[in-house]
Amino acid sequence: MKIYNTLTNKKETFTPIEEGKIKMYVCGPTVYNYIHIGNARPLIVFDTVRKYFEYKNYDVKYVTNFTDVDDKIIKKANEEGVDFKEISSKYMKEFLVDSKGLDVKPATMYPKATEEIGGMIEMIKTLIEKGYAYEVNGSVYFETKKFESYGKLSNKNQEDLEAGARIAVDTEKRNPMDFVLWKPKKEGEPAWKSPWGEGRPGWHIECSVMAKKHLGDSIDIHAGGEDLIFPHHENEIAQSEAANGKQFSKYWMHNGFINVDNKKMSKSLGNFFTVREIVDEFSYDIVRFFMLNAHYRSPINFSRELIRAAANGLERIQTGRKNLNYLYEDAKMNDYTEKEIVFVNDKELEKYKHKFESAMEDDFNTADAISVIFELVKFANKNTDSDSSKEFINNIIILIDELCGILGIESKKKEGLLDEDVNKLIEKRQQARKDRDFALADEIRDELKEKGIILEDTREGVRWHRG
Ligand SMILES: [Zn+2]
Image 1 (tube, protein in one colour):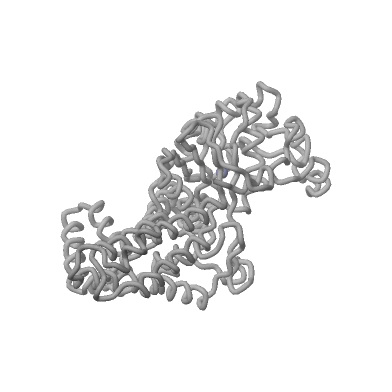
Image 2: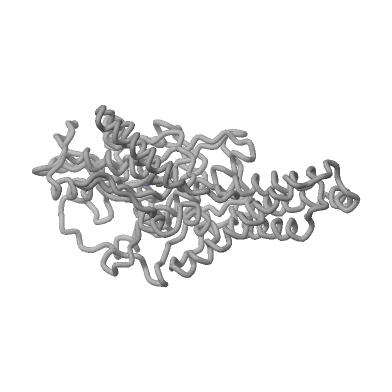
């Protein structure tokens, strides 16, 4: 299997540190809002990488963190006049709703920054002891000059970085490229006790600490969006390797950007979409299919036309799959026909499987892997009819489902809920609320949301519409 490693800038043959096992860390969200399509891409892409490894019988440990204390979370909490934890816990839950909708397998663990402060303080202490970090007025900085290979992931050298860095406004730093590990408490902000006074950790340190705690000093794959290469991942390497004295991650994988109508997605341009907004119009499985239609390292352009085209593509697979089901039910013969025996002897179906695997093993080329599924559906359309045997049709069905399953694609169209079912669930939710069982009430709301049913609590009662 070949993986493009950002650390070496080339495709490399993948060999895990320990045979049969993979330790994988994917940077998770800062939870202060619903995830946008830019966040959804690494979520889907690296889940697909994991699913493929698991299909290949690797034992995968997959860790994704929640940054649950951060400037943006605190700002939002202050604007809404609530505790920052109210904001972070709300959006952690919403993240998991979107993850489930997108068929992302739950991570082995979801460590939270606020629960790992002790470990962060320990690592910062080690970095100070080893001479890589220094304290000034309650702040602790990592001294990048001390870490010789700083810049190796992003291919930047220290001199260029320094020349490029703005003249430091805060004169606390010894060097403009130094980055913060611990910052002192500010008015109105949450803070934790530390040897350097009350304060909170910088963002980069949390990933180094969580990866170490839950996966060990050295991991196989570290992944995230390409916007994280510098400075976040560069800083993670500096912290982890300086503190642990070992290579941090053997492979670094990064997914490409998403543009909207060929423009960079940004709040100021107003072309900023949350996943929720898109699934109101389309569906989670279409979003996932759309993302996997491109190679993960290529930039993706997002537009209504393109997502509609993806929806049509997915529909083609699902229609083909449904027709096979009908044929299967009506098939009179159990055993292969003469024509089918030729296909079986030629190992025709296995050819599709091999082709699919070759695409995936060439740096997870999901675009080519999806083309193989299309070819398989085409083969099925051409070579099955009312004379086909149950056995043959069944083999094709199993293969389509297996290949779609590896990518997390729905081969069977989700049949929507009937109005009757929706009303029953809403009644059940109302009862749960009366019984003050809010956990159950929330669960029902989330379940409906996932199926595209949006609830609105109004004074006249609950109204709902299909997303
Ligand atoms: Zn990270």
